[in-house]
Image 1 (cartoon, helix red, strand yellow):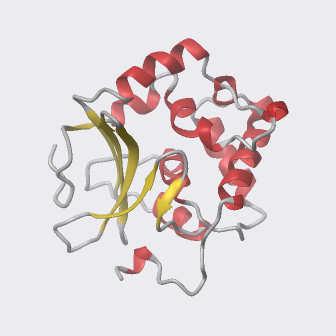
Image 2 (cartoon, rainbow, N blue to C red):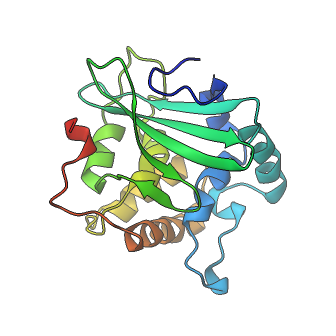
Image 3 (cartoon, rainbow, N blue to C red):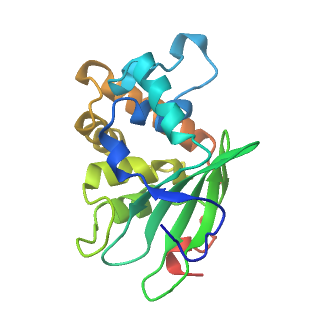
Length: 207
């Protein structure tokens, strides 16, 4: 599947993997750690087990097939998430797609942590809550929020953020007994590494 502006590898639609056991622990678990052994994240925080997580990891990281997850937006820029499975250069790339533009714009990559330009919480929610039924990709707003969550580089999230994130995690199978704690771990990690400068122009503005 071609994406104009991104020609690095054998891209394949990955949306069918979102409901597979082990996906969300693969995608989000590394963002839960705080360096404390007492709070070491485990697949069970996402409703997965270790075997499912390991099995899906092999699918997600296959060098011959790079999964792509499309989060198109109806009233503004959307996001594309790509598993970059180059041998020796693995990472996850984040692209913006702008209405009226033929080429996607890479804004960030995840390689143990985020490098590049991120978004504020309000911008993430805006993308998540404006699916485009006319475009191919993910329409479920909670799944959309989880896919774009790694782009968070804003330390000033609203008080409602943990509850919204908890609802999203619950919708994909995270157990209710631990879901709020999981949401707090994610937000603590993502906001602690925040490099958002309020004077920067948002990538959603097209600048």
